[in-house]
Length: 414
Image (tube, rainbow, N blue to C red; front, side, top):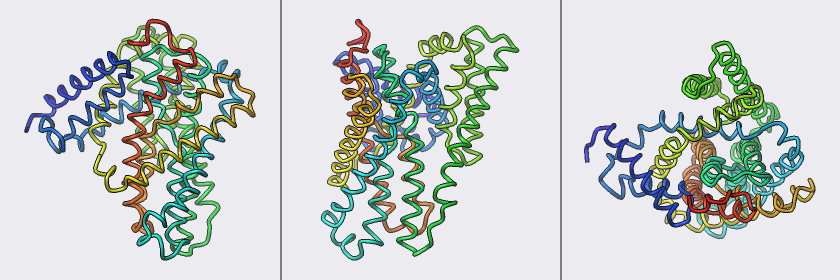
């Protein structure tokens, strides 16, 4: 089918909307329906969408993702963080690092067993670098799916806020782990000396730069909205999207993380301006569903199911090992922090979704020639795990929030 882009976009939005409502009727999160719609519209399955269309959706995806990550940051009010701050910090530390350790240790054992021809020659130059990279890519969580579920069902409470806070923060741990894994892998593969500046200070500088850009953008939107008197939803929406795109693009141009920058912008905005929470509630009701439909349906169109067959055993073990690390780490962190019982019990399921940053980090391996021998395997496995995490993650999140008693009555089948 050679439909023009505007027709194809209409098909994508309509299919996502219909599948989302069908999923809701079955008691599933709408986001699951959106992703399934994207999978069905994949050019490899049906001829409704031109093969080139998914490759030209970067702008729409970036704008949607910037709004979603902004909303995640905006869900973190300082008074709430003071109440849960210690718990969020400890849970983030333990769940991110336990996932890293579980996946890395497991793959050190599994890689030689499952691929003896490739990983049976030299443990140091093959198994160790790959295992460390897989472990690092187990740390990040995608907050987008959980945010969509929480808003669909009107979820509010300690578990919801903890999941949002932890998933917003563990990308930073993921970036540091990834950089350390790349540095250690380079030492193993090429015999280069370890560089503290490039391996540790570099990632920390990137994170600080991201937070700095987001903070400046949050202050900017606060100042401009006060000076111009942007009190209506319409005028604030225009200003928000303008500054949001500037924030996202500036972070990318500066080599910072756009997702951390827009999350920071949301956090600063909602805590600086007393009227921001009310305005943002209206924005969620007016445009949020369109953003979610576009982002998750397009994400589903990019998923490659062929990876599930080519690297199926490693994909399955990655999912299981990462889940074990997330559940044990989140539980231990919450226990040490003496978090409420329901936070200890129901936070981990909301940390399963994965996408966005982890795909970007995996694809970045191609920029390092020394990893040429393992980059294709890493990318294939990560794409396969994203398929699973993005499909089961929203369902696990909904179940956890429901059992925690944080889904409002009347929203169970919304």
